[in-house]
Length: 64
Image (tube, rainbow, N blue to C red):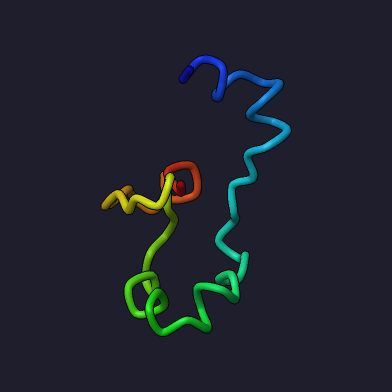
């Protein structure tokens, strides 16, 4: 399944990685149940937060 979901036909059509300048989605930002927990989060994968501390040069490529 991992090969299917990460291959070009599926991945390039359905996966959109946010950039650093993308705003926080309103359904997270405006909801007090979510915003305090996601306020300083860089990204999420399948609703999971993964702690990361890349160097300044690797930050953009390590995002999400």
